[in-house]
Amino acid sequence: MHSLRYSSKLVSNTTPVVVRNSLLMQRRIFHNVNGSFINDSKITRNISLPKLFAKQIQVREYASKVVKVPALAESITEGTLSRWNKKVGDFVQQDEEVATIETDKVDAPVNSPYTGTIVELYAKEDDTVSVDQDLFKIETGGTPAEGM
Image (cartoon, rainbow, N blue to C red):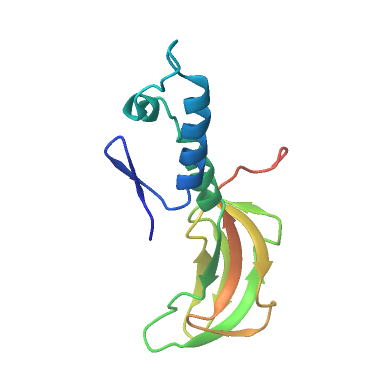
């Protein structure tokens, strides 16, 4: 793995090309009157990479997560999906109820562990679902659409 030390922080292996190109550009621009280049250490202090890291963080922020059927009750391993309270495209807050699963002992609400938009449902109403089975996919982050 390649890495690059920058301002006493370790920069990921995806950035050396950007840094190298920036250094080459600055070497061409910043030089003394006699034609010698400015010390590389002065150049590296002028390189700013926060936008690069902000984009990486933003990509992680809008990642999709699969939510599984939660534990329903002691010794119960499956139930019937009785109702979807949300549909694909709906925005949900963390801990908002998304579905209800019925068992012979209890009706269990399924709450979203994340804030985001429902992008896929893996079961239909009246389907039998098992604990730890994929239930729905949510794209985390973002904000609700206007008018919601």
